[in-house]
Image (tube, rainbow, N blue to C red; front, top):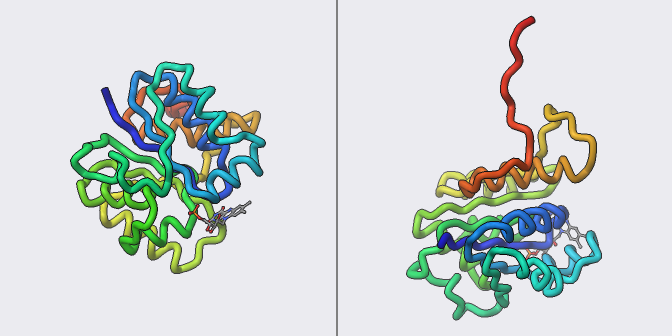
Length: 195
Ligand SMILES: Cc1cc2nc3c(=O)[nH]c(=O)nc-3n(C[C@H](O)[C@H](O)[C@H](O)COP(=O)(O)O)c2cc1C
């Protein structure tokens, strides 16, 4: 069974996390969720959801979900020997990006991502900030150079979205694509034939 880690940080855009977990919970996978303190707080501020209750609710679906404690460095997520298939941090704050770009791993979330980098496994980062400072851009470039996939929270408009849900699902679909999980979250471009 595939093993995937999803991280939640205190960047705006926690609805991306909510929609991604909803999709991943429908898969037969092992899903480990790690949230920073600010990640939990911003989730509640932006959506009214309590992380523990949301995960409990999602656990009724297919996936085997474990909600990790961010200060538990004894978790399987903290070790390369656990061989997780992929990790995504959605949304990813500039603070976490800065820590990852400099190998600072004081929490389970940052340690798990650092493990993915060192093991050359798939790490997808969905940063959210605007505008980016040069420090942000340098950190993102560094992480990209070291193998992370930088998938900025920048939904496309060529699908002519009619609702916020469609914009969110565009990003969720792109994230699932990076995790190599089949999905129909957004309409794929099929080209335009000249008339
Ligand atoms: C409502 C709210 C929205 C925020 N939005 C962002 C954001 O979009 N991007 C960002 O980098 N930080 C944002 N922050 C700041 C981060 O939460 C802060 O830097 C925090 O230390 C990040 O810690 P973490 O990466 O451990 O979650 C926001 C904070 C709050 C309270």
